[in-house]
Image (cartoon, rainbow, N blue to C red; front, side, top):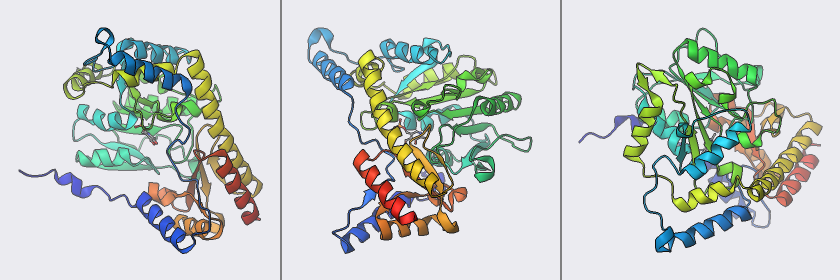
Length: 393
Ligand code: PLP
C-alpha cells in the first residue's frame, strides 16, 4: 500500500495553534488581565427558539413508530429544498428543486465537489484565502495558482486574459477580508469562465450578512452563471448551525463539460458516498425559514452587525484603513505604522489584551493586515472598542 503522497505537500496550519499558545502564555504570566477574543470565526449566540422547537418536535417524531424516519433522500428532503428554492426566488433566482442538494455544511461539499473534476485541471485561488480551497486541492494532487487580492484591487481580484484556469474559487462576502463583489464584477468573472470553459466554485457562506439589495447574494443573480458556477451555502453563520451542521449546494442542470452533466454526476456522487443530513437537523433548518425563525435569526445577525459597526467606527475614528464589517462579520484592517501582522498581534495582546487573527495566516497578501470578527459578545466587543479607542489615541 502506498499512501497518498500529496498529503506531504499540505502546509501545516500553525495559525490558530500559535494564537492559542501565545494567549495561553500571556494569561499564565498575567492571570489578572482579562483577554478579549475578537479572533473567533465561530458564532456565539445560541440557536433561535423556532429552530430549537423544531429540533425537539422532530426528535419526538423519531421516537414514534408512525413518524419515525430512517434513511432519507441523500440529496435532502423536499420540505427543506422547497424553502431554499423560495429563499432564492426572493432574490429573483429560479432554481429547480433538483438543483439544490442539502449538505452537512459548506466545508464538506467544498471538499467533496472535487470528485467531479479531472486531476490535471488548473486551479485558481485568491490570496489571502479560506485555507480549505488550497488544502483540498493539494490533497488531490492539483497545483494551485494564486491571484492577488490586495489594497490596489480592494481585495477583490478581477479576471484578465493572462489567467489560465479551469477551476476558479470565489468567496463573497469574503473570509478573511469581508470584501464583497458587486454584480458588475461578478459578471466579469462569469463571462470569463464561460469564455474559457472554466467553472466557478462560489462560496456564499456569508451571504446572509449582505444588507445592500444591489449586492449579489448568489452568483446565480448574474446572467450566464448557470452554465459555469456551483454555489455553496450554509446555515452555520446564518442561523448558528456551526455545531448542528447543515448547508446546501446548488449545481445547475445546465452545467455541461465534455458531454458530462455535473448535476447528474453530483447526484451520482452523493447517492454513492453520502446518506444525507439527519431528518431532525433538516427540520431545524426548515424552521429558519418560518416567520418566527426569520425574525429571530435576523435579530441574531443584527447583534453581530452592531458589533461589526462598533469596531469599524473606532478604526475609522483613528484613520485605520479597513474593509469589511458592513456586509460581513469580518473586519480586515491594515496594521498601523506598517507593522507586520504577527507583531501587531503581540502588540495588541501585550498592551490591551485583545486577540485578533494575523492576516499573514491567510496567505502572503495578508501580511501587514489583521482580521477582527464581530462574533464576540456585545459587552466584550464594547469593552474591546473602548480599549482600542484609548490605545490608538
Ligand atoms: N466557507 C467559508 C468562507 C467559511 O469561512 C466557513 C467557515 O468558517 C465555511 C465555508 C464552512 O462552513 P460550514 O460550517 O457550513 O461547513
